[in-house]
Amino acid sequence: MLRLGVNVDHVATVRNARGGAVPDPVRAALLAIQAGADGITAHLREDRRHIRDEDMRRLKAAISKPLNFEMAATEQMLDIALATGPHACCLVPEKRTERTTEGGLDVVGQHDHLKPFIAELSRAGVRVSLFIEPSPEALQAAASLKAPVVELHTGAWCDAVAHGDRAKAEHEFARLRKAAAETARLGLECHAGHGLDYDTARTISALPEIVELNIGHFLIGEAIFVGLAESIRVMRAAMDEGRR
Image (cartoon, rainbow, N blue to C red; front, side):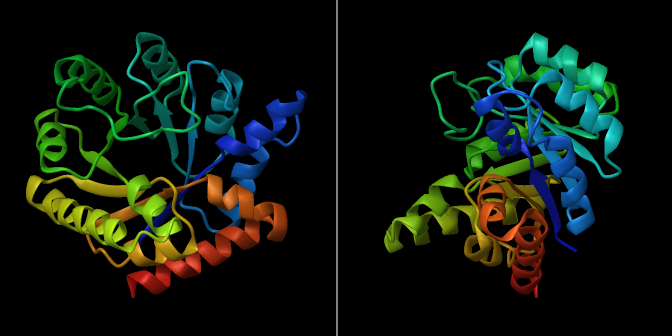
């Protein structure tokens, strides 16, 4: 079955907008698991704009499903990840000025920089994934780095769909389809995420090589209107429909 990882970052965004302790991303994670999430994702950014260090510790201690620790490839984040001991770490690009992750990790240009991070996390028993663009060059670099998992950046496709740019959407989805197929040849496990909603999740779930979708902002936004459990239930149903 196609797995659903729920990102709880933006529960923390709402909390931090006012300060204090609510809404609690750990409570959201527990509810997400109860509603059918197969894992929880949280991104500890350098500027701590949403998830905080203590959130990561509490998530690891509280949840019964795998914790996916999204992080930039920095020494500080490596130390925190090793101390936390999550099931997986997804290495992502990070810029202080961005609202959200704007593209895939430059695994070609940063190949030598990334290599020791992947090696050290792997030695610690942490499963490493690389958040990459759906390009042949990025896939080859990921395979060379010996990361077992890649997460394909679906943002360009989702943006094109949202803006009604049919030609661009078709082009971007063709890239995703080709990249997903190539992961099998390279021996990489294939995940996907960024900007997915019910409709795009249903569509991409039809690609058989993809085994996990990581979705956050849309689910938290929908939760304002229908509740988190219901947004996850509908997402799970859309994914299952697409996979069938």
